[in-house]
Image 1: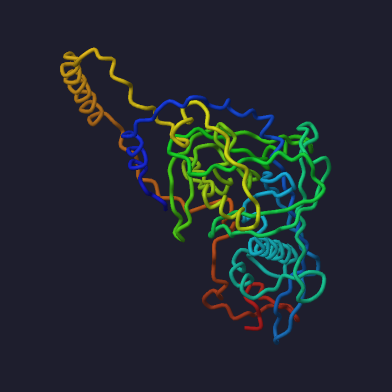
Image 2: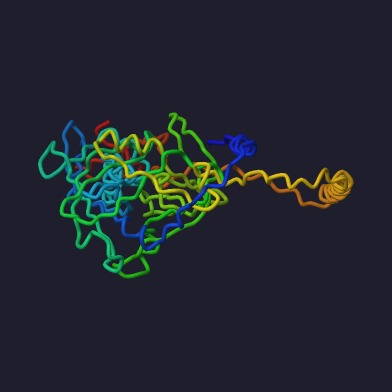
Length: 399
């Protein structure tokens, strides 16, 4: 999936003469960035209703609770916050609630093999609030560690203004009140070129499990690896900064502190492949909702002149004439390289082909879609009176 080569992206800047910028900003400090990054605690409580035999219905005895952790960042001085769309997407939360209900019923021995029921339940079960037909309430709490000295002095409840689902761009806008002195992060105006140095910021859940409640943000350095497009035509940037669960929604910035995208998802293969959202799409999404992004800061170092293009400019001619030694040196290198290649082909250990692992992203389902069909030969016998599901195969007895 997404195997587009990055060769073209690397070749284009090679032919560009890049003048040295007259002045470049100093790299932004982590302490300054940390004041603009927030932790998100997301909690939803809901009742799950399911059909029973004879056309009836029932509710799982206990309300289901789903809690999640994501990251976000301030994009205005008045409390506008960006995070990943999948963190607050009602459909993602609904799926998690149904999974919790299935696991609860499996433990109570009302069904067997909860994962086999996921596709059926997702289509036929209802998730609702305190009253039948009402929407479940999702609360998003915004926090910052006290030691950061940021604008979030105590926990704030955030309003979900809008979101794009994982497949449509994976970005969301939240809004909180009662914040003053916020330092919004500037948004870059173009996607990073391959090789651009960057920093991905967020609150990894794995770190949160081994430290106290005042978890500080983690900073993962890396570079832009490629520009890709999803099957639905949504642009994405691959980065080699290590992302992990809980960092979703945090910013990935360049060395000047300009946001290049929102931490989105990763693929687990023999190594992780990490992705952030599109830069220009983020700016358009904010302007669509009346948030004018802060203008980007001047680039730093090698990135200063070409819009985050990290490739160096060709060296100026020193006037020393043609280097006559060069052809002989190149020929010698080719002979040596040929000898090494022959030795390698004769002596290398040929790898055993490895089956390509299935796509696994942080925003993707934990269970694969499976049909809850009856196994061959199941006659639904030996079930206790009043049973709603077959103990042998887990199928609803109303079918």
